[in-house]
Image (tube, rainbow, N blue to C red; front, side, top):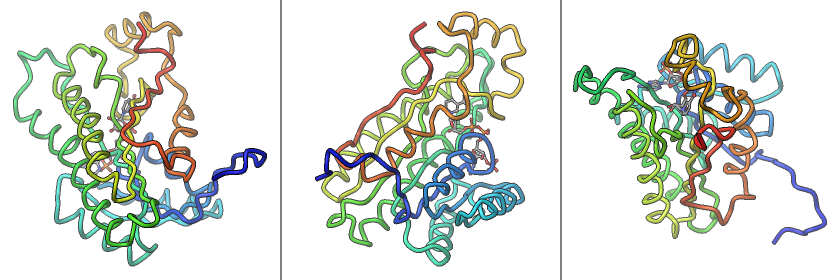
Length: 263
Ligand SMILES: NC(=O)c1ccc[n+]([C@@H]2O[C@H](COP(=O)([O-])OP(=O)(O)OC[C@H]3O[C@@H](n4cnc5c(N)ncnc54)[C@H](OP(=O)(O)O)[C@@H]3O)[C@@H](O)[C@H]2O)c1
């Protein structure tokens, strides 16, 4: 039990974290923040040139990182990526399943079903493959005894709020939140905590140009604070959920949206 007179710190030096979708946006930022707090960070995505650049950036700031090519839709590549990370950094005890795509932004009647398959393959099946392989390895490394396993799935406010023209994306994000709750239950006795973060809108490549459109401007106008969220909004939640301080928190969905979903 923690001494109530000792201040909170986030020392993640015993953490080996795999971050999927680390080549841009939220994933790249989370990797930097985690590395700054001592974690060894595995950077996974398909654009390996970007990952190599991020690895150098983290190393230049005194951190430890390892870039690995991964298409999360592939089970084979997922297993190979974990093998490579384990050889380079040691067994992964923390996973951030962040890789995601948004294909729709069309009326449902105009949406080709193939886009559903692609979105599903990355946003839901890919998140499952990443979490499952991580959990297997955590269990093999003794998570039941250490209670050290941490898995964070990146959902979205679209999992519970209505975002027009995003049928496929919203459906997969709702799936992420509910799947994560079931995984949290299934793995609770194995010392693995599974929690979700549901961010509101943050300016990244996934919504590039959106807020210059009439549709984007109408979203901004209805949000109580009339703004997208700052890029640093998720930092503290990510650190908390990856740390020992979240030991008895599992199966939760934390909304970080500056009140956007209140509108
Ligand atoms: N920005 C927002 O407003 C917002 C709000 C709520 C939730 N989110 C969620 O946050 C996560 C990160 O999004 P972002 O905003 O940072 O967007 P982003 O900048 O477009 O980043 C998406 C990341 O996912 C990776 N990715 C896509 N397909 C992949 C695949 N098949 N295999 C491996 N990696 C893949 C991309 O890397 P490669 O292309 O190099 O593979 C990229 O690093 C997503 O799950 C998104 O749904 C974002």
